[in-house]
Picture (tube, rainbow, N blue to C red):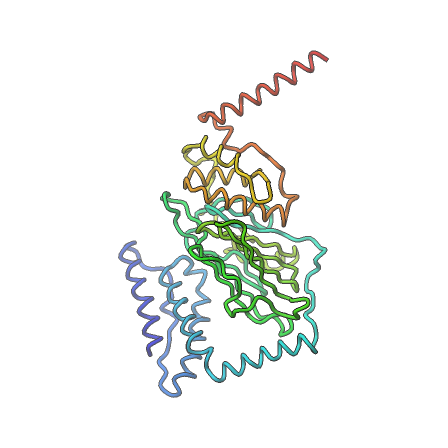
Length: 393
């Protein structure tokens, strides 16, 4: 079959490239997922075989994370399934029936139940920059995590990000592709929907099926909105009212960031997977201690980040100031200043109480920098002033 041969060729070529470049066996066992040839009623069998193959490949997602051949084969198979099977008569009838059921339920049927209380505690997670991560339990990490990684995974939706190398840096990576999958949950709530963003292109203002919402028009259970922040920045907001969740996707230049606010109960119930970034953080081997990074043009980075002002008139503080300085030293790309402000704006919106408004970066305590010397001088002068006033009184 053409589809089978195409997918096999893609996987084989990438496997050969990786094996030659690394001189080690390819660990991803994607060859265990086979596409049997279809002879009788080929279209029906082909769609069924593709569905089985895609499910098999999905079961290998953890073992094959970051394997380019695996992700290429998955992309090809998903594309072929969409092209060949979504136009199939049976599929179309089922799909139309599902949409009719959805439409009927929004007018005459039951309403979508609210599964989590808006008024109860929520948790926030965000990923941006080089990349920098704030987990649901409030941990702050800077990570390598090259390739594809799961950000959030639960029975209602999943988010995956792909990080690629940054220009002008041999080690740093940043998010350049992001996928949000809303899983079908009751006809009156939502059908399955997908949202994909790539840093090289403008953020789509609709889901892949062309829609921007699910549920009743007057009170949608799912809604997607797009806004432009400035000529080089834009944001998409996805609201899932039935699970009291908000997801934001922001593009600054060619880099992406993701933020999400979920009910605490939802993050706790489905917090078992050790490979989901928002739940358990980056693997220890992938974490970077930014305090130990080689100092490079520190004064310029500090000045740029301190003097920058966000879209709401705010200044960077806390870890977001530190991350801005770190990214500027690593990449020398001022887009990361804007990315820091975009992430900081999400925190101001979702979780402002997590900020302590620390305005001095950890890098300013470095004795080898002019800024560090000035910071220490200011601290010594402040202490001397306090002592003088105390003696005077």
